[in-house]
Length: 283
View 1 (cartoon, rainbow, N blue to C red):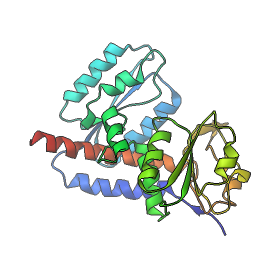
View 2 (view 1 turned 90 degrees about the vertical axis):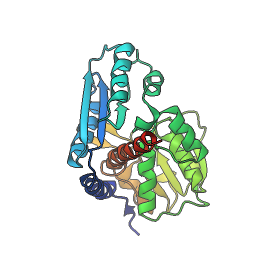
View 3 (view 1 turned 45 degrees about the vertical axis):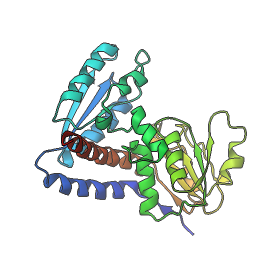
View 4 (view 1 turned 180 degrees about the vertical axis):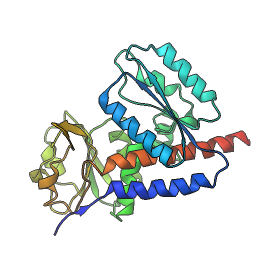
């Protein structure tokens, strides 16, 4: 039986259409600001996609571009201005940053209620405690894909490959909240294949091209590929898609799977930031 293709691109389009309708009914446009430092081609491409999606959904979009050698004081000053700007409801700093900048210091400077990426320590704390939170966009997008395709999680064994603060750790907690049994794997995991072969759900998020092969996946597993790796002029995932889809029951493609959902969730988060700020202003 052929694997179900988990079409994140189509689902993201549906979400953006719904957001556009919501925005039309508002008296004020949601404002999203993105800060980039340097000219990393991948970052420029990602932010360009966010800009196109944001403007298309009726958002006020601001892109602040800084040179590679920008210092922390300059960036912190910009973040402070955006924190005070009432037209900006959500803000992100595009990662990775140049090595001379501390991502923790920069992200911590964003007001919690304007943290559209869900990376502020207080938002992550709320996620880990199971409270209502502005969730990291990529893990949130993964959960929405699983929900949309009615993939059961309770009692299932989920193997998460990768322990980043951006994807690996947050998705593990979100899966735990849905009563999955979660195993986290990383570069020091002794026998990765032995663990992935036991998995009902695999989330691959390490940025290593075609790491997950067919012989590492049990028949009927659900495979979520978060990886985006350049190979020649193509973008490929962490999963060897063509061979793994022969054994998986469902799989996300790359591109067209998790990536579009990340952008859609960023826009959704910005709208949530706007709602949170309105509530705070009426207290």
